[in-house]
Length: 265
Image 1: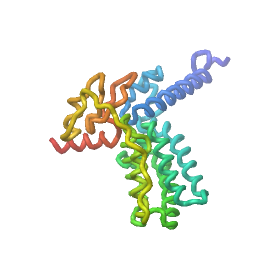
Image 2 (image 1 turned 30 degrees about the horizontal axis):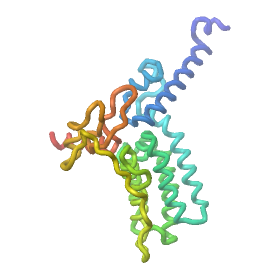
Image 3 (image 1 turned 60 degrees about the vertical axis):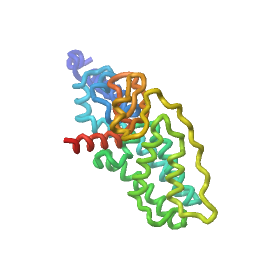
Image 4 (image 1 turned 135 degrees about the vertical axis):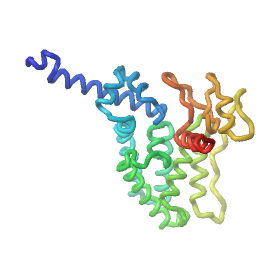
């Protein structure tokens, strides 16, 4: 062993740094998938078993750490969506890409936030642009085949996707129903009617649920420790196992609440 290594520098120090970085990335991967961009950096450091300073030495900001974590998932999703370009049926390829996106991103708040139209467009920009290009190609093919209404553009599809992720991300949603409604609306109206939608799953009303009025005004009052709800829309939240409880079900509601507070001032 060299004198530098014996003093705590050199290879051992570099090995410790690599291990710490790996622990931070693993903790961040789980935290972002569970909570999304709302997760505090201190919570990620706690889960990794390191200090906040260690996290900052490897990643200058929470956004930089988020990008490092979400890029792999975005690239994998882009590859799967891009592979559908080779499918023989342009209509089924496009609709399958939308369903695949919702299935992949719905349970993962990191991917959901990365695909949201309301987050900073600079966040993971190259990977998001590659995904958008693959989806746009499928949309163009489907429209040329007459399977998607011609007045829809790629920006419309991305906005609708954000809506699907928000609607299906809550525990009370019926898997696939919101997506089926959106996809049905994208098709040209057929002469023989619309395809049937998945049946509605009836949720059992909570004793603290609100009825009527603006969900954003009553959500915070109805939320309790045993029955956490989004402060904007009132949707049930999955209780956090550790760290600070989530206040919103996703980035869309977080942005709406922020705009409402700004307007109230």
